[in-house]
Amino acid sequence: MVLPSYGRDGATTSTRFTATLIDAGYRVCARNPAASPDPPAPMTGVGLGDLGDDIAQVIGKLGHGPAVVLGHAFGNFVARTVATDHPTRSPRSSSPPRPAQRLHPR
Image (cartoon, rainbow, N blue to C red; front, side, top):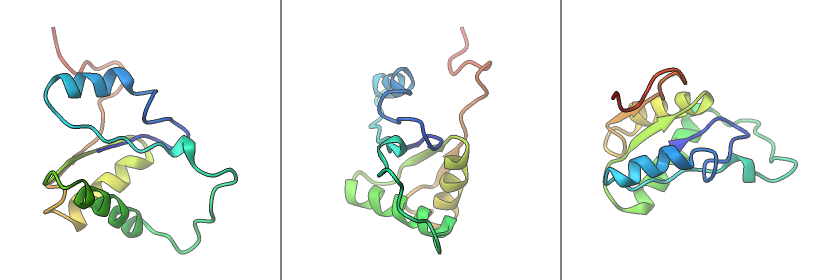
């Protein structure tokens, strides 16, 4: 599960990254915060636990077992919340490397 930062289109801005994961044999699900309603729905009374619960619910509905949740920027907080609150859905979370780092060293 890829959680890009708000305003990034998870389906297109990370295409090369998700293609690499798919080529390695992973299933990839990336949410698309850029497709949020305009204006976005009010987020009053919503905390990290609520957002983590939503992601865990999506993982459960996909039905492929535990998932690695990769979060960028605010998505990192949500990914860590999922791993902490729902360890059977996501036993681990991760943050992407800094842009200067390579995913696959030569």
